[in-house]
Length: 358
Ligand SMILES: [Mn+2]
Image (tube, rainbow, N blue to C red; front, top):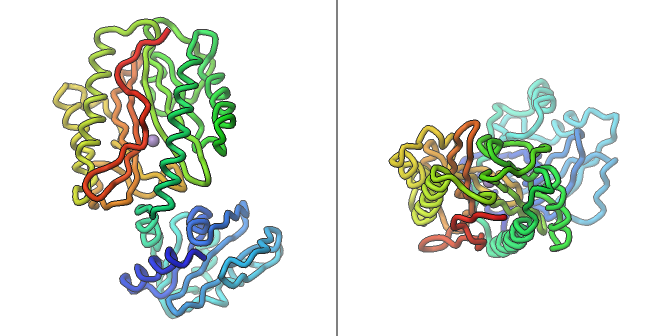
C-alpha cells in the first residue's frame, strides 16, 4: 500500500464518520497499492476498515505474488465471493460502496445484510485522486509531452490519401515509436461535417478542400493519461469557419486564464461559455467545458455549470470548448491544465493558432 495515500483515505473516512469502505475500481486499487489487477467479471475488492483491518479480496485465478502491504483473502472460482467478503465486514455499521461495483455483487451483499446501510463511498477516494501529488504531476507532464509530439507527427501526415480511420491507426504507431504505452481512449479524427459530432467514431471519410479536421487524441504513459484536441482546416477555410475557430480559441484561453485555486469549476465553465454565448453560438456549445484526468482519462470531477466545487492546487483537468454546426463544421480546442498555487500550468504546448494545412 502507498501509505501516504492510504492515510489520506482513512482521514477522509474519519471525517465522514465512515467505518468501512469497499473499493473495487482497478484504477483506485492501483492508486492505493501501485498494482494493476484486472480480474474481468470476477470480484476484486479492497476493503478498508477504520480499525486498520484492511483486506484485499481476490480470485485465485488472478494470482498476485508480491506483498502489497495488505492481507489477501483468496477465494476460488466456484465460491460465492460476496459471501467470503460478507464474513469480514461489520454488519452493524454503514458501509461505503464503490460507485463502479457491479450491482450483481452489491445486491448479493445487501441480501447477506453486509452493512446497516449502503452508501456511495467513492467520493472519498475520488476527491483525493483529484489532487495529484508531486510524482503524479510529473507523470501527467510526461504523458502530455508525448501527446504534444504525437499531434505534431499526426499533423504532418494529413493528406487526402488517408481516411479518418487510417489516421487513428497511424497514431497508434506514432505513440509506440514515442515510447507511450498506448491510447488513453480511442482517438477521434473527424473531417468536415463529421467534426460537428463531438464524439464521432472515425470512419472511411476522406478530406475535401475546406474541411475542418478535429483530432482529439491521448496516450497513456506509466499509467497516467493525456488528452488534447486540435482543429485545423484542409487547404482553405471559409470566413465562417475562421470566425468560429477564433471564438473557440478565445473561449479556451479565457477559461485557462480563470483557473486558479479558490475559483469554482462552474466559474471556469462560465468563462468559456459566456464568451461563446456572447458571440451568438451558445446553443452550439453542447457539452461541459472539461473533465478531470489522471489514471483514468475521465477521472471524477467535471468543469461544468453544475459543479460548484472549488479548485485546489494539484488538480488536473481539461479545458475543451467547442462549437458544432450540424452538417457543416466543428471546432474544438482542448488543453490539460494543472492547478498551481496561484494559477495553472498548461500541459500542452502544441500551437493552437488557426492553421490551414495542405
Ligand atoms: Mn477530453
